[in-house]
Image (cartoon, rainbow, N blue to C red; front, side, top):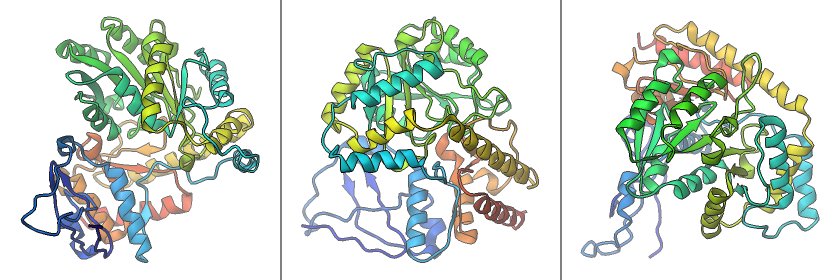
Length: 449
């Protein structure tokens, strides 16, 4: 029978192993108790008779957690649809539009009839543009025909990279704090995530000695996740530190590095550089470079990303993609060519200046709030991960729930990033919105002292 769902201000989805629970809606007044440890949507029992057990679902689902960022964002959108005004710093999405030439290229592609399937790996025009960009800016050279795969967003490319690199019985090293999808993707491919803790006083960057010890203790490790610049901390590994990490990895030749460099155009150091891990001595043949257009060119809705890797790895990921989604949108790919070939460098640099100003403002305001600390200012991306463990006995999830209920301000609990006692806020929004958000946060925390 067709499912129906009851709705008030939001839904719940709860999938636990092979059990599917009945649909239940709730009101904002019950927010703090209802959403705190559950998902925002709940499936209705598919059977019409209580005596008939529903068909079992994949037991793997019992191990996979939903993305807290997506959950909070979905809740915000539902609240807004119900007429509530919410200030949201939960999603990493630039507040500016893509350059006009990108939008024009998408329109021109549609009018020219470029609306059909492309090769699974992407159009040769886009792959050549990607290869040229990586060679000129990052110093790494890839064959556009055999070593670049264009996907439906960088997230798909991360998953396919993991699926190609490891499987059942393998382990994936995930430095914490981490993007929440990393450990869940490891579980999806049958591997076990191994959390490598980092220190706040080090800016949450990887300590080479700690990495060495972790790899010694986990001989089944097949992949190291390396997000640089980091989501959620904004930390940027310097060339010197990356070189030290590479030296450690030379001792473990079977480990593949998934270098997620999606934020590499948003760096606030004096030189503005973010070294490509594949460019380091001895690393090219074992590195999968992941990047895209969402953060640098504000093309989140275009869903366009890519991976660059040696032919053997790229071929494996293209086979997987051919059975999962086939090609990325032909229109998005045309826009991607324009992003790489027509957007002036000054446009990108100006965005860095604007983001740096927003970062500085947020850090300045956080410094005024009692019990809130940022040990090392972030040098990249557009996130800050302040410590708020002095409140709510360190329960960052409950803090975020009450903040949303009382002040209509949406942040993401640090627990979901492997950083309990913190909250992640994105400053990729307007300065006016940031001012409202910082006022709400300050007033909320002052009421809890």
